[in-house]
Length: 453
Length: 185
Image (cartoon, rainbow over all chains, first blue to last red; front, side, top):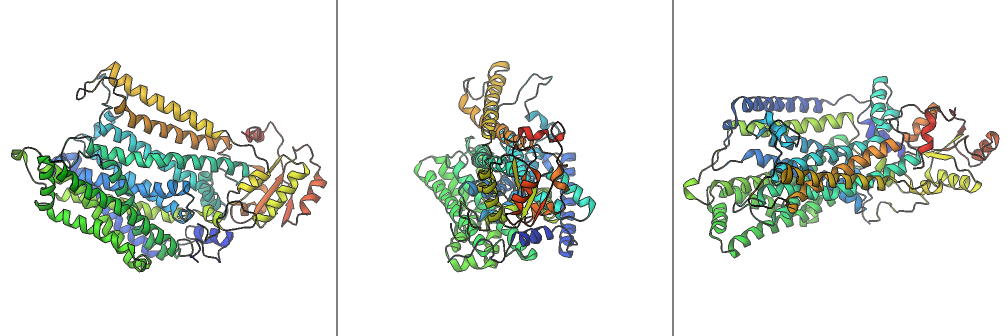
C-alpha cells in the first residue's frame, strides 16, 4: 500500500500549528541568519555588477560580435525555465487531480515568482541603454512610433510580464486563507494587523469558498496554457531567427520540457534541505519526492529526445551550415560544454529509473543539482555555440566570460536565495488549508484519502 | 445564531438538517473549502466564470487590434516583407493579453464579489471564531431568515450537539452589511 500523502497522525489543529508555528512564535534560527548574511554579500556583488554595467556599458561583459548574446540570455532562459515548475505544480497538477501537489505548491509558486523576478532583470540589463527599457511598451510618444509586434523580443515582454503578474496573483490568492489562519494564531498586535491586512478579512465563509474555488480553478486553467506559451515564446527568441542551431521547430516543446525539467530540479534542490531543516516530513513525504523525481525523469527524456532531434536534423537536412554547426558543437572549442551537457542532462536522469535511487534523498539532491547545472550549460551551448561560428568563417569568434558576467549571475542567485528565505520566515511555506483539505472525512464526495490516486 | 462544531461530518449533517427545516439565510465558516457543505446550504452558482470569459475576450480583442492598428495602420512597418495584416505574428501577444485580462478579472472579481477587503464583520465578535481558520466549523443561521425565531433556532442548533451556540450581534441592513445583497451572485 503506498505511503499516505499526509502522515496519518495529523489533525486540522496539528497541521495549522506546525506550519504556522515555523513562522510565528519562533525566533529566527541561527542557520537562517547566517544564510541571509551570506546571500546579502552576494546581493552586494549583484549591485556592484549592475552599477559597473550601467556606468560602462555592455562592453564589460564578454559579448562581442559575433557572440552578441551570451550569459545574459543564458541566465534569462535558465531563470524563466526554473519558474515554470511552480506553475506546473500549482496549475497543471491541480487540473489533473494530483493531490500530492498540495504539499509543495506554495513553496513552488514562491520559487516561480522569485525566479521570474530574477529572470526579468536580464532582458532589461542587456539592453544597451536599460533606462530606455520603457520603449518596449506601446505608449503614445513624441517619436510617433510603436514597438515592432512582429518580433519575438516584444512577444517576450508581454509573455514574461503576463507570467509574472499571473504567478503573483495565483500565489497571493492561494495565500489569502492562510494569512487568515496566521492572523488568528498571531498573538502580537503588529503581527495580527499585518496578516489581517493581507488576509483582507477572510473568514472562511462557504459562499466565499465557493467563489474562491471557482476563481482558483479558473486561474489554474489559465495558467496551464500560459506556462506552455511563455516558454514557447522564449524559445521563439531563437527559433524565429535563421541561425543554424536556433532555427528549429523542435524548440518550443523542447524548451518547455526543459523548463519543467530544470524547474523540478530546482524545487528538489530547495525542498530537500528545507524539509529537513523544518522537519516537514509529515507533509512532504518520500512519496512526494518520488513523484517529483519521476516528473524529472519524464521531462529529462523529452529533453534527450530534443538533443537527438537536433542531431538528426543536422544530418538529415543535408544542409551544410546545419551539419557544420552540429559538428562544431561536438568537436569545436566548446565541445567540453556539450559533453558535460549530455552527461548532466542525458545520462544523470537515467539513474532515476531505479527506485532505490529515487528513495535515496541525498542522491536525489545531488542529481537535482547536477541537472540544474546541466540545464544552464544547455542554454549556454545553444546560445553561444550557434553564434560564435555561423555562416561566414571570417565572422567567427570566441566568447570568454568576464568577472562581471559571473558577478551578475551569482548576484541573482543571491537575490533568489534571499527572497526564498524571507518568504519562509514570514509566510507559511506549505499551503495550510490545502493540506487540511486532504484529510479524509466521512461523507466526502471526492476521495482524497491518501492512497487513492 | 452561531453553532460551533469540531468535525466536518457534524457541520454537514447540521447544514443538511437546517436546509431541510426550511432555513435559507445561512452561512458556514470552515478552515478549508467543503463542496458538499456549499451544496447543502444551496449556495447559488457564481457567475464569476462568465465575467472572466468577458474579461478574456476583451483582452484578446484589445491586444489583437492594438497590434494591427499600431503596426499595420498608424505607422505601417514592413518587417521582412510580411504583409501589414500579419495575423500569425500577432497571435502570441493576443494570447498573452487574453490570459492576463482573464486572470486579473478572476482575482479582482473573486475578491470584490466576496465583499473583501472587509476587516470588520460581526462574526469576529465571537471569541472562539479564531478557530474557524484552524480546526473548528461554524454554522450561522441569520436573523434575516423569514423562519428565524431566536429561541427556536437556538434550541434547534443545540439539538445537533455542537460545542457551543452563540448569538452574533448582527447589524441590520443598510449598514456595511449590505454586501449580503450581493452574496449570491
